[in-house]
Image 1: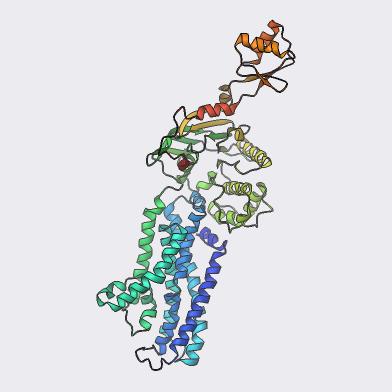
Image 2: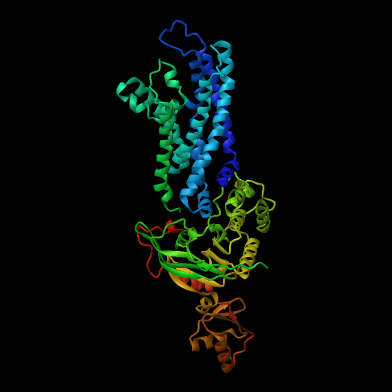
Length: 263
Length: 314
């Protein structure tokens, strides 16, 4: 366990990714905070969220746009071992491969929480002044909004665990990053948009990982605009679906990649 | 001097195939404690594959390996029983030497002080806080050795430890390995060059391509397989050559004298005395172990079959 923490902290990658994530969500939080508090003018088709919904929608970029970061840091926790062949040393020290994988999955939780909390602070710092000054308020004293902020940090932690599980399945670092970027930036947004437009697909779209994460937070990029086109699962179901992804990926990795011979 | 109760390392009927390629074939040998054993074979003979099976990284197709009374992975803290250094390149380039040791120190119960001491031991005090990406091959070998010693293990397994070391480093490594053996540890060292370990090892295990055992004995017994050469300096070279023709020796000019392969010096001395040939030097040349090694590991007329990839097992 401690070894896994040391593996991360003795490299520079984690804080570089943390800074980039904080900057990225702060920027998007600012842009969204500005947009949501700006009168759409003559364009009456656009229904902007107002009040606490406006606040949660702005704050939800932590998950909606930021989840690629915990996925990447999580996957790197495993793929780095394969890229630099340190997995040999790691397995010499801990030959029980389930323990090796389990330690990484567990350590991803606090790592993800740190990423989540920093991202939440960043988006609040950037978005709340705009909401307070130009909109209906920042709602930082509102229980639902606060719950949604805390749950966002939790969701980021689960994303990090999913990242470790995915990195264990796809141990080639470049491949893992490309797949994560392609899925999060391209495949899933399209799938969710299609799911929102085609009624028959809506129930399926709910179970996409990003949609499940939005369900936990209770707000979404996708439902914030365009009149709440995507139905979200209940909060608890969203969390279960998300954890389910981590469990399935980790189990698959354990019986495939991690069972193989190391050459 | 600290003494260790080194466990014997036992390899029994070990076999590993990768698809149609046989990397290790029914390999059986034992490594005794208190001695340095050289595990020798040409590149691709299956040395690393064997060591990886010994260390639980690769699953054998058949057979088993034991360290002491059980397989490596069945020891409670394996790295405290066997210290292993397999590849000189398996470090995260962004970590410092000390950082690398500290990552694994906790799991084997080594303190930060011990990490520093080990870096001192392997001559890496200066480089402790530098990132591994700037290390030379020799420095990586030294760091790998320090990693292997983290758990102060009674058995040490090193894969090609002399690779990348300068001559001074090789001498240093030789002394260290001898010292380990004297302490009672079990020391297993692989190499594809016999000369590299010839002055270090007590025992040899030689495998040929395809992972077949071709020889296992003490170094002295291996040396006995070698034909000694005799070096002769005679002022009347023509007389010596005539003597050689009569006796059926090969007499090859070398430097100021002649080399007579595979003929004991006593036989030459006696013959020269009887024939009245004056000799100024008569010396037995050290047995050419490298030749024996090459003969043992030669493919015995069969070249690598098409579709065989010797590199796989390297």
